[in-house]
Image (cartoon, rainbow, N blue to C red; front, side, top):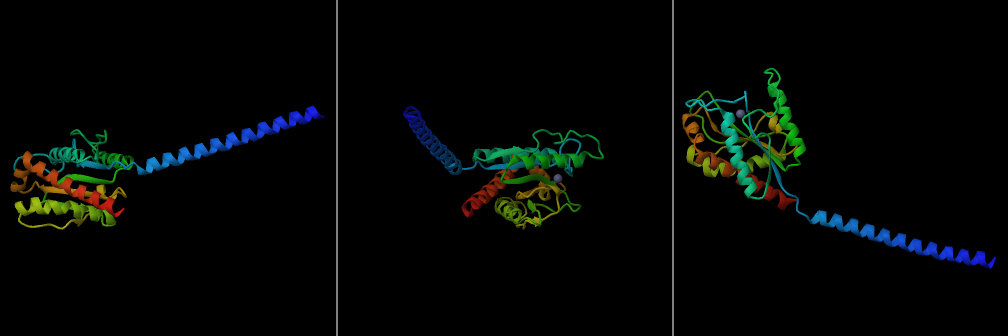
Length: 245
Ligand SMILES: [Zn+2]
């Protein structure tokens, strides 16, 4: 009986030691998890922006009234310049397209545009980005219409705010010189601003129906100037959004 009692006591001791170990292990695991969460929280989230060059491939968009230049080509060049400015400011850039082709491989004229738009939306949905900016050129039957203007989705308060931030430097540094006036950003019913809950804007950089705007858009310096000012607007929006957060 004493032997049994001794064994029982030893088993009891071992059980207590085991319980202490389990408790210690639990404390360590909880501490490690808390630490990991704290480190994760203190790590600043890398800002990411989707840069979309409108049109591409068989869908060239509008055409320059004098030179016949395709909107899709100018869009892509401005998108790259914008991406470079954003990257140099430490912002990660996700391009919807980096070649002159469409984003979707579909070449069936009947479904091409729809599939291309859906492919762009898919990239935006997967991006985990802070915002979307789509680069386009405008066209109007009257040649006198000129200037850079930003569009947003009517339902999106953040889109409207982003549009105001992007329009401001365009007004101050581009429109003031080219047309001597400012434009207000406008609500527009366009797929690229409606397809996402992210703040999304379309920048119509200039009018390819205006010989003056077309000439400017064909120059590298002007395209760079547009990209730089759009970048400034985006950075101001991001910094304002972070301060308000
Ligand atoms: Zn366009």
